[in-house]
Length: 504
Image (cartoon, rainbow, N blue to C red; front, side, top):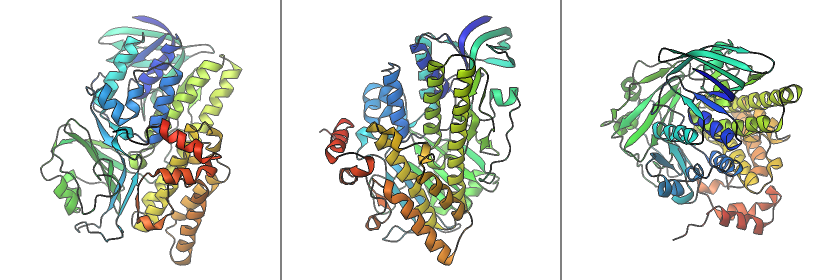
């Protein structure tokens, strides 16, 4: 089999298939290459408001109305109920002491709930990847992309103007000649192996181990107090010294759950033995997929692109699912790489654009890694852990609002990492938190975090009367319009356009 293409995409998860769809809308000849076959198990399942906005922008820019419904829970359920998913109203954290049952105070000392939407209709989602990825592959095929599953590429060679990939599909030889290669094959993927890309230990995050699968019959977690949304309708985090457990519910009876750990554990049951309240939640649960172990869980490369090839962010770095950063990082990368392929010609112009793409990708992975590393260092210090997460929520909410108001220049870089004020403060606060400060140094760090957040806080994150339960309120956004260089009436119109007010 011999195929000529403008772009060869290796990996047909959501990132590869979305890239293929966008390129096909521009009449590019695309071949989408998959080592396995769909439907298949995958994690990386939890969206965020910024990720959903990026899906909307991709759909609008490339005339892909079939993917836009997946940007909101309500439109997804009305338009594509055949694709399983889950409702994510926000981020729910419970902080556990080992070998003790979970207990909390009236002031929510051992929990944190941060809403991402005011109601279910415009809620975020969990993607049941066996259905979600299969649907996107079928859409890419319908759009005219050549799809080769069960295909192993074992040789790749690049010249000044093209690339040649050679391998086999079910015993038959395959040769693909393409002008450009996009690696969407995930961590430790195709080009990382084929080009032997340098993947040193992470700079800040200590080695973590993953243990995860899908379950049936996971009980709901319903401690006293509902909070700004039902706590299970979210990305549910059980945090404890040395790691954390995620629980993500889908609407087909399946729940994704797993742990990211600083220490190895022999089994899931051994881990839950030290977390009695979580053990109760999984008392009747049954795995429906073989357990997966990932050691180490995180992965980074030092090189992201070269002449005629590029890695998407999901192939160049996976940090940790703690803050659901994987989707927005990857979708930002898709937008940027598509822009490079659309607006530059092969040669010096494209090479320069790819170097900038690499610089931004690595810088955003750095910011994400440093923040997650600081959170791991603070898992024994719940108040500091909670305060650090507000850096993330301030940056994420501000970035989404600025982008929706068409003021993207106000929010450069993921987590505002390229902002001349917030970016350095984010790094400084995280570096200080990693030292586990005590006494006056710890008090000073709390104050510094608050000062960093204040100019970007449009969600009432500094309102201590909320006792670590943060709803999404129109009043917060309107009263902070000036921080977004907007008038209150502009923000009110934005809220109306965005479906903020639920229609009965």
